[in-house]
Amino acid sequence: MKDYTCGECHTTGYSPGGNQDGKPGLIGTWAFNGIQCEECHGRGGAHANNPEGVRMTVDRSNALCGKCHIRGAVNEIPASGGFIRHHQQWNEMFRTKHSTLQCVTCHDPHMGLNPLNPERHLAIRIRCETCHFKEAASLEASILPHFTQGVDCTDCHMPLAAKSAAAIGTYEGDIHSHLWRINTDPNAAMFTPDGKKANGYLTLEFSCKQCHPTETVQDLAGAAPFVH
Image (cartoon, rainbow, N blue to C red):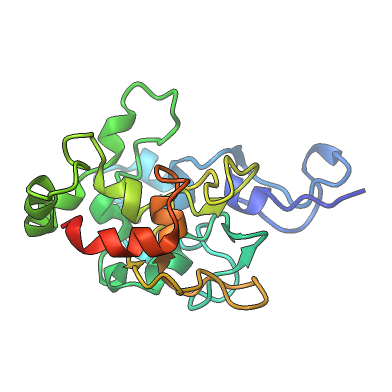
């Protein structure tokens, strides 16, 4: 029987000891299912009894998000089967210049990204062009028709380069990458030779081939200077 330790990142008030509800293979116990308020803000009983006198914890650090959105050492990006492994957005972000930002700069932690959430669009607090306005203007003026065709910044700079369950295609997983930087060298490798680590940037295969599957990386590299 396989042991499941999913509760560590998918529950509130997790403890590694014991066995929740006596279910075989389910490792650990927890207070509440899912990620609820107290998982990020700490226990709330004292605050509920005295809301003016007892303040809740407000931690906006990436380390808090990284309790769950990490895999292994933060300065490495584990990979497997030709994709970045799932739930390690902090590993990816740590390897980029965006590591100086906070996760909550862009994400509203109180608004779920579930596709069925009717207010999902509110989960993103700011868009790329808020900071990268020059690049956004360049994209609009590009001789290539990406802007007029409705291509968004995240389509290329946050492709589905990570995989949690099943891949959609050879270079298309099911989770958006947080690496952002695209290496336009056609010979660049996305992963280390053994395939167990990502190299800290996106390659043209992942950033471009989801829309241009028949183009060679040499052709894509040749077109890259004309995108912006």
